[in-house]
Length: 193
Image (cartoon, rainbow, N blue to C red; front, side, top):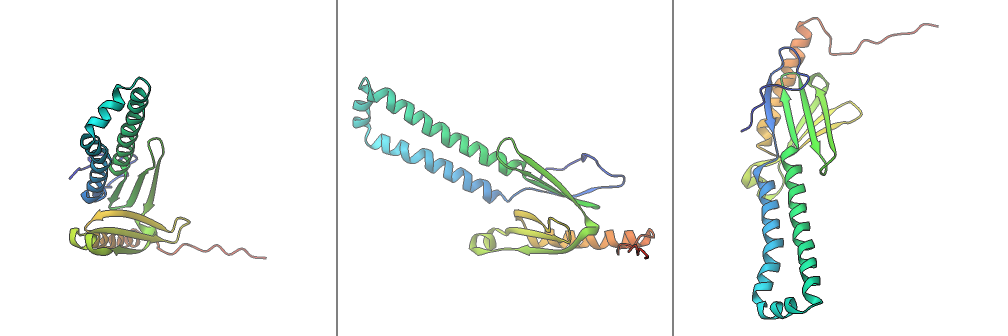
């Protein structure tokens, strides 16, 4: 597992509790799709090799076939690279004070957001289907009252355990806030006539 020694904008006494990425099964799906999309055309070309040799030796069809095949294989490689980049750079960091969500969308778009633990109202773990049950991975939803009402941890390992840790950290953060003289309920300012 990858551990973070230093967080960007790390607060005083803030410690990383969880550093999460999607479950390894997500990358396995990318690898299987890549092998299938590369392997099937190569197998068909090998099976019809005599016909392919005749087409390749043709002065017009040969270069066109090479260009089409090159575009296809480079497109599959690019798609696999983009999917792997998205898998690897999507991270969720849970500290003793906040949750940080970093989402990579394509090659050149990244969104990072954070949520103070004091704002968390509910945490839900979800495991759906046969594969998620067998490999114990799923989703965790963190509910808040803010504009973005849910932080969504997608396809992470052992979501029940992650939910329990976040719930415990939220309770500890609320106890710490109350013990420091703070209040969990916002102060209401009443304006007179």
